[in-house]
Length: 159
Image (cartoon, rainbow, N blue to C red):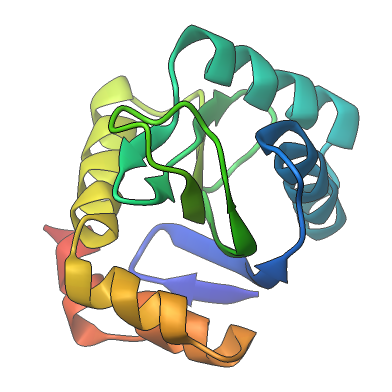
């Protein structure tokens, strides 16, 4: 288990995820999160699809930030995913997605905590240098270092 900041549990990074569409991507992501946390993969998958139906997680420039507040998790969880090819997420700019940052927060915490965490993650996910470097990463360890292992990230989450 890898902790970043005071309250963020970063459990995984997925490099080169192969998916034909966003449903397949969510299925594989739900499986990985289930393996990491013990959460029910089918319930996670359904939650991702329901959230995506109500509002796209594609924020633009090839990035999606699916986010859920769940009653069954105790600590925030972040998963960075690099897809092996771009897929359509019906993003706001209509560009296909190749980088995903999944944010799960406990439902028991105040909504503003989740929104602050999401805002901080979104700022990082909108940073062109970070995203370009993630796109050029050649392994999971490189992705982990690029997105998480920096004093800047720790400070951003603590703010």
